[in-house]
Length: 226
Image (cartoon, rainbow, N blue to C red; front, side, top):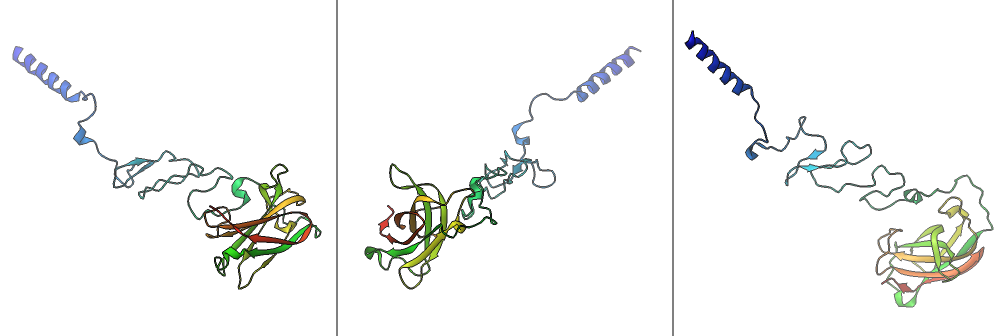
């Protein structure tokens, strides 16, 4: 009987040790990066440098972090926020501003007409097919310069001869609810990259001050942006 009791006690001890779970973390060689596929963790992207956690995982409208390591757009899903990357194009909606009402009445008397010429020092520097952007801004009384968002905009394409002619009226307004009237500055800019919202050294600009309405304005492109 004593021998049977001893054997039973030993068996209970062995079974108790096997059922006990080890404490602490497993040894480092057992740590593994979650595999790519159905078993991957949400928000984890695999790449040559190891796993990267996407902080936007599961957020509606947020871009997914891919294996190419592309940048995450912190403005994704925010109305009016500019988008990361791309060509940088867009309109006033990108800035959260209202667009003009396409059905609004246009006052034909509120008009600016004139020409854009090229200064003598810059002849031959603006080839055919180049883009000239026009922007009409309200005048700052203190500086006499155009300030704020453009009241209206236009775009001209350089042909085979100078000067170029322009006509800007309320139909070319940029922001809804903006009055196309009063003292303004009309600026013209030869843009090397054809992108209205970017300026760079070498762009050639010129401007004229006027009061709407005005005709036969003359703008000369004679200043090079540093």
